[in-house]
Length: 242
Image 1 (cartoon, rainbow, N blue to C red):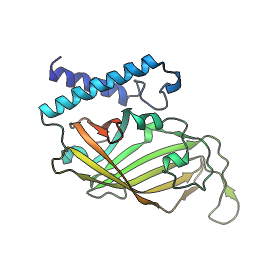
Image 2: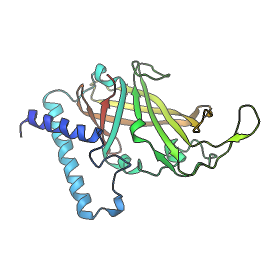
Image 3: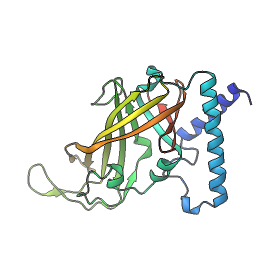
Image 4: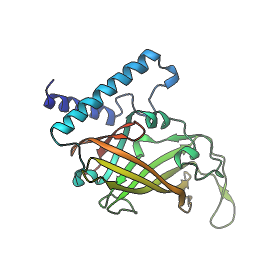
């Protein structure tokens, strides 16, 4: 297969992922426990081959580095393979979503809303904290068994949140050769709401120390970006409303 055909095939594959037509959406993904060892090995081999092809393509055509115009804005992030894909499954918990920043909040099991989860990067991101180096991960969720009661602002009565949004905020720095982004996560914001007009926004909670990770750029185009995380996860980033 030629490089051009490979790229065309990957774009078609990407469209399937983004349209939730493929299995990688966390809400549709089969349980890892239900997959046979043979299926796991086949999946691993497939993504290893895909990663190598994308790495080769990006290197040959010098598309394996950051282009500022392609790296800023609002993105849909899809973990294709690796540790993070396995942990971003339903149901989740508030500890997992906020990196243990709200241990005193008994919300119980949470269901992630994949279609409304986004990553915001850079100055042109439609986000209140937009800056040249912004990196923010927004994760909306619903509460499976709403039970927590919060006081009304008036001080009279209470209400029970049924959904919320967790946003982990930090910054990114580009390597000198532009082939890697170092990501520093610094704080988390949490908002809870119910089906009426009740909303409660917690004060941002900074982490005791920044959580550092990195994304190695395998391929960056106007239509999508493929990166490999420092923990081995393979990600697709698709621009939204560009």
